[in-house]
Image 1 (spheres, rainbow, N blue to C red):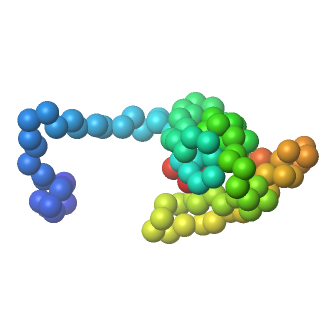
Image 2: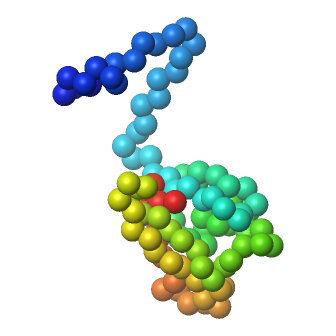
Length: 104
C-alpha cells in the first residue's frame, strides 16, 4: 500500500479485526501425522524439532519418523531439510536442530 498498490487498501466492514503481529512473535507450523497439528509459538527461546513435535501431541501411528521434512524460507522459495526422528530418539543431538520462525 505504501508503494501505491491500492489492491491492499481493502474496505473494512463492521466486526472486522485488524491483527498487527509483534516482530518478536516467533512460531513454527507443525502439520501432518501428529496428534494435534498446530502453530507452536516460541518467542525468546530456542525451539527444537523434538520440542515442536511434543507440543503437537507426538506422532500418529502412521507417521514416517525417519523422513521428517522441514520447509524453511516459505512456500515460494523453500529449502527442504530432512530430519530422522529415530536418530533423535536414539540420542543423536545433532539431528534435533533448532527451528526458525515460520518453519513448517
